[in-house]
Image (cartoon, rainbow, N blue to C red; front, side, top):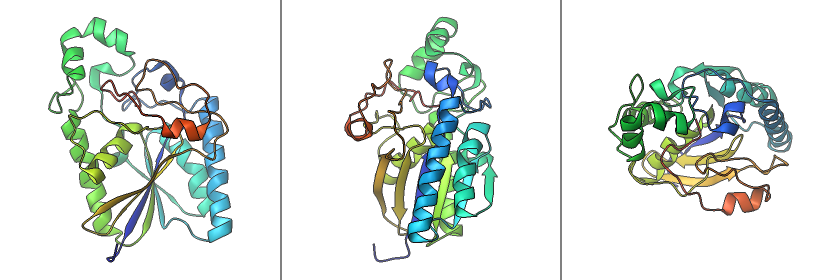
Length: 245
């Protein structure tokens, strides 16, 4: 890239108890589980090592204002010696009446809405919540604003699986109606760069700082503890959700 390049390090929040059972969180403010707290600590240690080796690694650290993201972001900001900027703009998709329920409960209680959800229609609005398109627009407009406001800088954005998915699609042009083939892992480090015109995926789903396998809830069966490298390389079969909220 030969123009001023802005780099985004996208970090998904650590694991929650609801992640483990695929209970939809959305805007519901769920804290990290004990395992998620451990993942956040490991992430902070990784960033501290990067700072020790390379000096300043981020110019700003921004986070969703939901607790699971803030808890994950705090060790990152602390390792960098930077203030933590909380914003509702980085919140997960609002899942409306689906929140607090697992998919089987949604199918039983809201069969028609569940069918629309599974149809991958980006314009289907969950009752009380957001459509995929509205969510994508919210996230990409905010990212575009960050590009204008922080051109040439390196930003850490700590957020949610759906936010990472929007950013990946924005950078690569993958349509909202298409399933994803890339993982969205708890406490993962994912890097994108933009020179003002062209985007580049620098790295994705890096969990080398974690010593156990992490999950991507798109599948009914949790990912086996195969090691981070194999987990990163594995293709993801996305039902629709993606169940990473």
